[in-house]
Image (cartoon, rainbow, N blue to C red; front, top):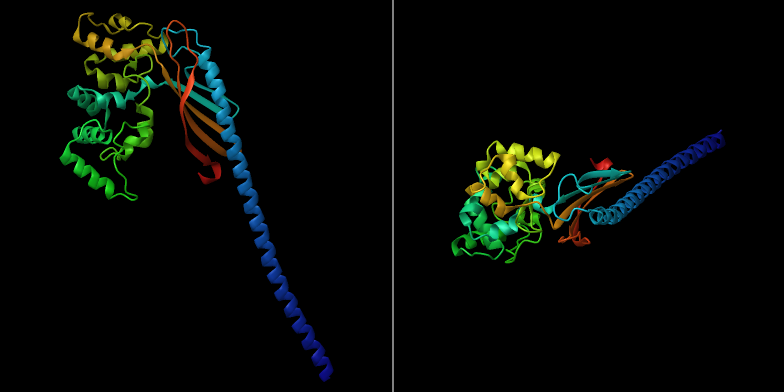
Length: 315
């Protein structure tokens, strides 16, 4: 009888040991599977990001071809084949002239401070201290130094984490203005969509937005809608056409101002490329120059940067 009890107890102990080992091995197995799964997912993300990035870089050659194939050296309009948005199998490309936007570099460098403040006050949101913002940006760019304001700006920059200091030179990208005191409250997408630092100061009337035209020329009133319609449907090939389109007098102060600050040509272009592969979306920005005289020049890449990399499962 005692022997039977011993055998029974032994079997019970063995069973417990087996169960413990099984549970331990099961946990280890699950952990191994989880780690392997994570590794596979991470490898898939890396591969998708690489392929999407490569697709975005390949798009640059298509952009070059689009700009080179332009046969209209005297004007750039929305009817040109390169203009607007085009897409193909996971790739979307939008090309616009840089001078469709407000050139903040030209504006802040202008000696006509009153006009600069007037334009900025119409472009920026109401309630902002435009005068101080413009002065702080001028200090940041090393254009003009107000010792009292510079001291306030430097105190603000030094209190940030990490701390930084004004460049003392012209901004290198539109988004850099977000580092300037007073400008940091602006939306990044708004800055990217409305401001530029590339190209000349003259706006291309065929691509400038309604809001931008009114910021520069509020006297246009409802005439701006006729200008926008003409720009969309036919395109201006000479600034003088605005006289008949908007009903202006050729000797008016408004027309003279428009003739000095508007153009129908562009020399710098911004291409925004969105490439999607396997749930990964890469967005890149290319800035190209193309100087035109009597014929269309070959485009050159002058700047590029990655805007974002996102994955569908993270949204």
